[in-house]
Length: 239
Image (cartoon, rainbow, N blue to C red):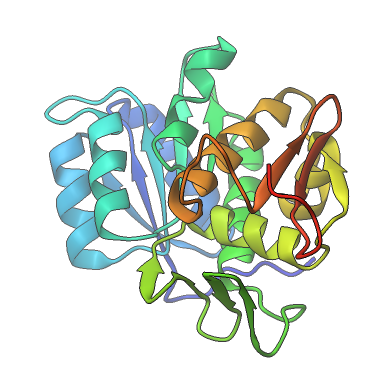
């Protein structure tokens, strides 16, 4: 498959381990990307704001400003795709970045070929529009505009990450159909990583927080206990 990387597409790599940064830069540049680098959170935030990278690879633990705080701040300002780096191996720690709004995560020590592949997948979710409908869909107070790549709750624009938008778009294309977590991973995120099924729950939790009037009693994205999730049809009972 041809790389999506274009000469003007910049990736910001942030880690206080200079060896990791240099290796990530080497592999990403071989993949056709332009690479910006930072070794602390404050510099990363400044670069993100000034240079507007297409994607950020962000370490969870950083000096000056923690990676969590960088991610939280960026999410309040933009929907730039973020892949979190973490040396931690516990599932709960791996999901911290997703809770904060990151699109994906990868653990250290890094497989840098896998990192480049993940960058491509996340960017593909951000830019690919070939299979999207050519008009907006209105579902009660929720409107999904596939041309503008925008979601509105009433008249208010809802800021979604690329992963959240793709997840919502996936659901609204097949209302009423129940999907398992593995199916959602395969259809939305490209590959069904065995240990990533819990990340679906985190993305849905974040999405519900943004589009549901009461995230504890969702009316759009419903849990099918013991199976997975579905998007409510108009003729379904809310719950």
